[in-house]
Image (cartoon, rainbow, N blue to C red):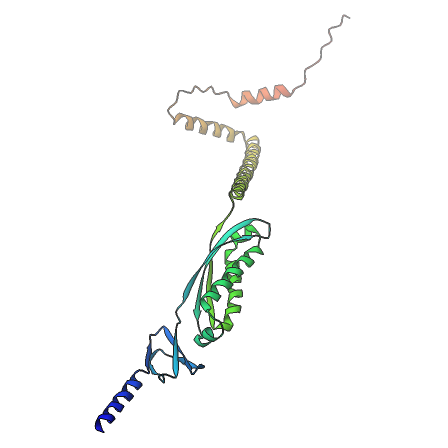
Length: 259
């Protein structure tokens, strides 16, 4: 009799011990009792009823999904290939298990189609220059769908945009043309400013002849400081002024007819 009691006690101990479960800090246990959802347990050690309770373990850490390159047509009819990476986390393990058959596959598929659709609604320039806006829009749409599954989308990053070679060459030519245009505008503005400065200097010198002589001596000093064999012939400014005045005078007509 005592032997039977001992065997029974040992069996009960083993039965109770088999119900002990444990989960790490980043894990949760979804418990089903006779097929019905009982609740979420963990982290740490807890006890479930053996043979009646079934446990499904869920990792609640942030996960990454690499969305493979997708070929899509932009709003301006350019065919491109884009890929992205998506970060998500399970915030309600019970919903993630009971609301969708395989939440990993479901998240991947919804991210795949959403990325293609959102990119197709934008022009090529927006895809290249406004990635943050597209990333946020994809995150917003995917998070709205997966929220009912107990899953939160933390971040979406579009990684690469592959453009056809012909389009790349066209964009390179356009960029080069814009750079040339910008350089010409800068040069024209500089020449206009220089012309204005020269006109201003000319007016100042015409009002003060001494300024012209000072500038002439300054030029001589600058040329003399260099090692060259340039011969300079200085013409007095008075002579130049007289020549200019003489050139402006009208010739006097003479009558050579006989009296």
